[in-house]
Length: 358
Image 1 (tube, one colour):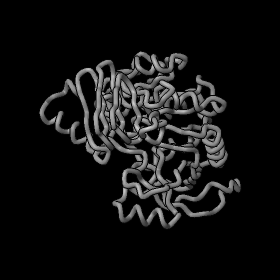
Image 2 (cartoon, helix red, strand yellow):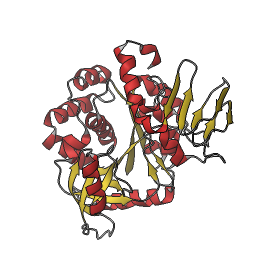
Image 3 (cartoon, helix red, strand yellow):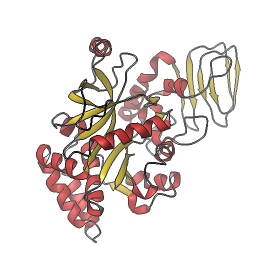
């Protein structure tokens, strides 16, 4: 059986002021079709798994949003973390829930807030990964073929070779590396031996639990305690007590950088992690002036800009390469070259205790 785990607990602060603590990026509609990012994530799995085998890990604040956006998802498939502890405890918690139902299951882990243009190629790539993990102990991940020297992603260094199943497009992973500086990123790009780390993984449940036991033993012990309480009246108390003791650890640092038998499949399916407002240019059509406009907007001599309005009229004159995002209580105006600095606004709001805008 194949089970898919979607991680949906992140805040997506780079889409402030639209993304807020109570409405993070995965629940925003950033494409012309009006669907949220998590709705896209679930829908693109059609043809691979039934919704009964999709699990969403989130926090209690977002449980009702999950129900609203994915109404056909079984309630018991919404796994609630009592607090944010990074991706390793998140994945471990999902793994023991699936293990309790089917210890022989294969597990696919996906982010909830990426966009993919070519769905059939994506599904074929997942199928390749599932074939790789047929061998006990194998782990598969998807790397994205880089087309520019990005410093905001981790990278996967791979060795061109053939997996035991002779899948010609799966390569042995030599090293998983952290986000590089620009000079290193340029070297990675020209070498042709590095892929962007997409945060998508595949393994058998038994394999990932053995990895937790070997590399994160304290987390593994806690997970087994939580597993024993699943479907009992003590589950919630046990979960809260045990989960709070887990370290905040990423799956990359905690397991992937240490595990063996990892294979990467290059993904060429139009992937975009939609990391900032500037990403909208890659995923939406522009008008004749190069603008992306949403809401009640009038533009005069305005070019190559992104304007996201709501009910209030926004009128622009003589602007170029500007981003404007308007909500009921906040307005963002910035140059397109400065979109990554939105996180500094967030830091400023936290420092000045203006939490009502977060």
